[in-house]
Length: 237
Image 1 (tube, rainbow, N blue to C red):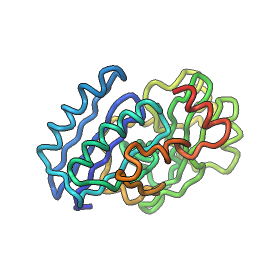
Image 2 (cartoon, helix red, strand yellow):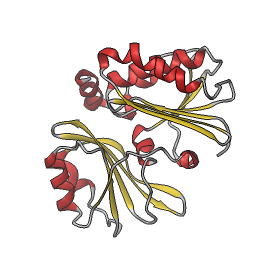
Image 3 (cartoon, rainbow, N blue to C red):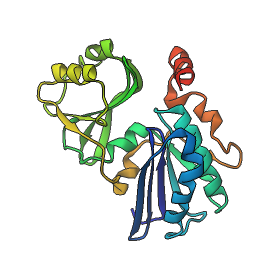
């Protein structure tokens, strides 16, 4: 991928930005506190973006959850105004879990499980196999109570299983995955995103900042959660 690309995700307690124009690349990973995010992070964003000009031809990928609903709304507000002022009005919405998976080396033929805490007893997760440079979805992105994890993986599982998750997964969750997959390999998404693999991600939708600057139409049901999951997700965040 050589075109001008920007990737943004603020769903997990930090703001992530990757930027590429030709061979030049910049990145920023900054943890934030909700109270100071709007006053501090736009300055950091401006410093990075000024080194590589943004314009209408920039392709923008936005991590749209699941994760902290407050973090998502705040991040979209910051990014939306910043892009709009530079003539960028169209963004591609992708799963934040999918973006997370591109921050680790993917293993050929392995089942990759991407997990993120929702609350003490529930996870957001998805699963895919990686074969011949393509992801093959196995479990669509969903919320999963800890007690239901065994039932999700009753299908024949690949010999190699990789759990992609930040270090703060609850101990009970780690123990459950270890029981399900004795040879489980753990991968922490702490590297830069592999921008060359962005085209392998499914695009949920394409949004126009001119008609929906906060993407509220999409964010009303974050990450395609439905019914009671959506109501609980919004109320908890």
